Image (tube, rainbow, N blue to C red):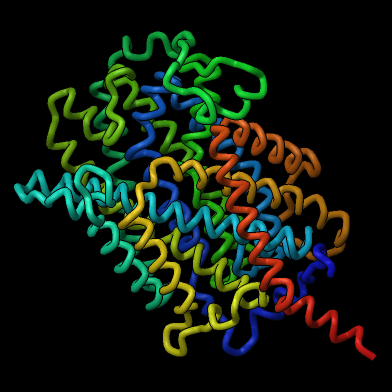
Length: 495
């Protein structure tokens, strides 16, 4: 049993041409940039800005967004080299298989399943809240029983969240090109809304709302025990809000805003010219969204005192606070439309990871079946859509949202390590894009990911390790016995 057996880059690329496992190459560089913007511009702008400014960073919330973007940018440079060199579905899972070995690849694939499925469920629940708010504004009031999960505010099932997941899953089955067109329309709408917030909000900014820009640290007695960040537990630091510790703690929360830029890499097999288009899609979408996040958070913090910002709808409520409810309604519409794209692309990435793991034999082979008409991995898409719908409809996900962050950071960390490994083991491999300043950039990426991870609560680490343990059991019970790489190696050793 060789847990570190690798699947060569050449074999990974060859597998993409197998009959029955071939995806259509329909995506351009612009499509990939739009995909990245579509998934990143969402919860971070429409929800997290108020929460982290109010509870963690104060007016300096823009710094938290910028620092989180820097960590993502370091990882994106590593992703770009891998994605252009190994243009195969599966993202970090596929890259890890080519460099670190089968078991690390399985772990990261299992990790991505958690990240993307749970992320889609969390965003679906957030969309449901905005949708209900819009209906309320129109005089249509949905009962709590169909808006909340069991045990939450008289809820039974979150019907709008389930409906959204079902519709998006149907779009993904119909084809990636149709999905990309829908996403393009949605992205135009929500970017227009974000630009409206920036431009219109500038007229209501008050200088006194920025003072002090970094408020003095304050003890936060509500954060204690396993809910405290791991770093503060290790060093015995009393949890605080504001100050530099507050800004650092906020990074671990706003990191959720950037989750999804790596989705571009999962669509590698569907890019027309992956060696050129993937680096453009990864880096371009991240740069654009980082600028939008920094601008929006700065404007909103200047419109309203940070202690008064709304947790649920900070952008809309900031305009209501200055007497412009019409703008608030437009923002609500933008959030409802915009979050659709986030769910769509997270589910797209999820199905491609499932597809890649199944094609390698680590999951049952029927999960990688391609629809004869639409050219999509329809079974894995439908199954994961069903799982996400159940999560969104029946389970409160507030605490589990932090699991999405730690899973993503772990994936970034392994990809950064993988670049160093592949540079040493395959120095002559053709690379359309090369990460600059190796080994400095990958090492900084690893350190940045670790820094954000230790600012996540201790209880998040417990849940993450439990999920990894479950994944290990499945691998040893099924995956290692059915691995195509392992079976091929065993066959070659027979006399």
